[in-house]
Length: 158
Image 1 (cartoon, rainbow, N blue to C red):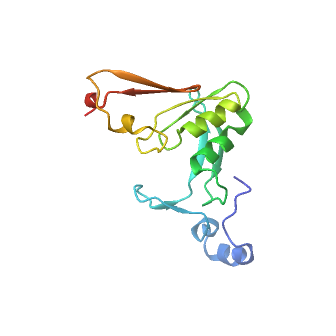
Image 2: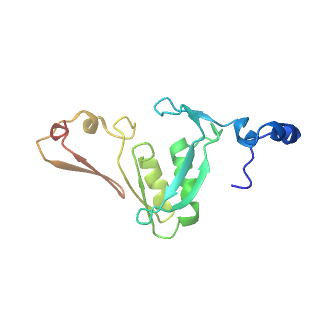
Image 3: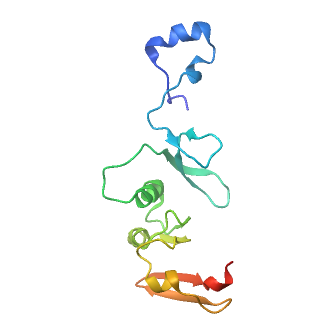
């Protein structure tokens, strides 16, 4: 934290003479995010990888806005967070924002497995999965190479 600075060095002395909280109260940050569903509408967004058992933060970085690379944001974030752990036979668990077939394949090439929920809007899902209504309490499996998609019957979810 001692390396994070959000104030202007040139005007710091003058501001501190009249306001002890000047280092934080006049802070300006070019990568603040608007988050409409949060109580405080603006803030700094951090991507964080945490250990599931200990809840300790393993890796993290702030979201700095759009990246010019062709890689999707979700795939780029997971790969950057997991960089120190790739190739060691670990497993990554993600939510539906991050989980995709392309990410699963990319991680598998680096000896890392992926488990996660998947958003129904993903273009990788066949139309039969998105619109299909199966029998109550049934589970169906789809396989693609080394990937397995498990989905419950939609009629059992209300």
